Image (cartoon, rainbow over the protein chains, first blue to last red):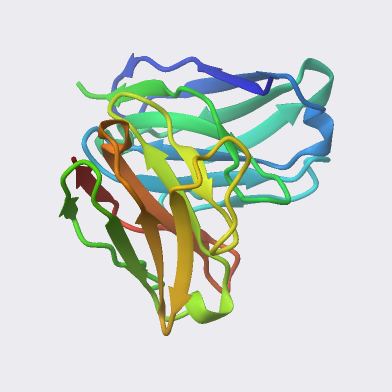
Length: 118
Length: 106
């Protein structure tokens, strides 16, 4: 069974940094592209970032480009999101999601909460 | 900017049919996807490529297309179907976008 488990969310001050992790199991992680999606409390879904299976290509939404960095470690079946210069509007649940031939977000983790506040 | 428009809410009684619409200028040329998010849970994929249903999703869930829009239809709605539903597609720059979400109340 496919499992994705995010971690690393916490309370951080504006301007601070945070690194999120997504541990995966139940599928050949190195063969799949991956995404990060976020959801502000009580709000809708927003795509954040994408990475190819080889890490050769990364994409970012305009709202995080230049501040967030997506990466992966295929040997450890893990996906990461390094977040810098955090702003209150970055407060959200952050989900990792797998890309498959079916859909760009075919399996999701349970999410980790990032709160940016002074 | 590319936008997907959904009604904020839809309300039906148990056993009735619910239809949730999603409109966007590029939908006729791009695949649409639907995700269900129950309260306090992560989203799950319920429809892919406009009309296809993943394994494990009940047959009462179906997708359709028309004009500049797509729809998610849930036949014989059950209490467990109460959730937020999001449509999703991709714009010409390769950016994934979601609709604003529709709260289905049963």
